[in-house]
Length: 377
Ligand code: SF4
Ligand code: SF4
Ligand code: F3S
Image (cartoon, rainbow, N blue to C red; front, side, top):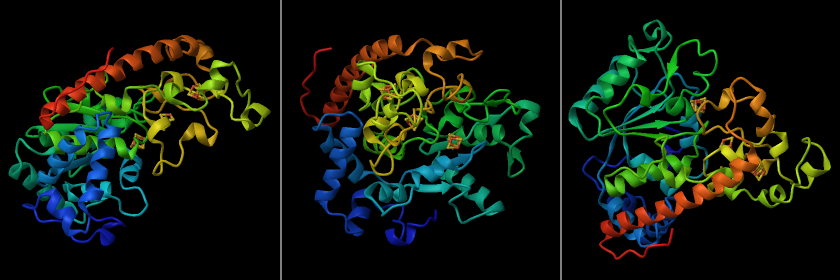
């Protein structure tokens, strides 16, 4: 792969190097590495004891072959994971992955690129991970998007055949996203509608939070297993709570203090954005806690309501600036009013988060051979 930070990171590690050796060669101290393992454990909602297991798992991991397929997409998801900024340890881990095929980042093109894909599939059969961004057009034999002379459907089925797991990155791949929005002229479908015989992890968002992507990959490398997923196939660690549950404007919501427009006194005072269309009560994502741009901010903190970009069909859900309770007048509607949704979602996600922590705690403790202490549900 090549990108703007590659020169700063130095040469790519040889295939037989462990991640621990590669980071050490790059001058990453053990202390920094352990801090990263603790941070990863925390964003994955694992207990502090899991940090040791993550550190050991990552340190001993060998280069993971990843084939990244881009179908009907806008490259925003790739932009998100290769975001600008100083090279971080997450970048180094991303560099450490053997990214054997990626249209935007690879140097090879044409026949050489396709040969690289086939070689990676052959040499890593049963072990490689396929990452997909973008949806797959099925209408008219998939003619609306072809690569290397074959349809996206053909390339997906061919590439996934010997894969260990599939990660659908972004709402286009996870749920159809913008290409699948009404009237869906290309017959776009999400990856999970096509791939039904392999685990498919959905990391939704338009685009997804970079840490949700790198955290999921770190989990796969550390534990060689899938993280716990919600009913939409998303890692619960990042999608277990609604934006509304952790939003710093929630106290205004509880007191009925709502901005009525984007330039009124309420908006200036930072009141709740529910009445100007915020979809936070029915949107599951980690924006309110992890935030964006290395934790600087997220849409609501910047003064705009959540669009619900990590939920299925977000583009067609009745208007970005209509409050949830009035969106029911639209043909395609969000389910339920915000007051009901807020209360129900809060209770459900709190329960789910506790269940997740307990399950993760047991899994992590087993991995680390450490005793687990369970929370009451
Ligand atoms: Fe672009 Fe959003 Fe689709 Fe990602 S999910 S490819 S950012 S439209
Ligand atoms: Fe925050 Fe939106 Fe919920 Fe208001 S409705 S508290 S702005 S998430
Ligand atoms: Fe998307 Fe809402 Fe986060 S619009 S980026 S899920 S605050």
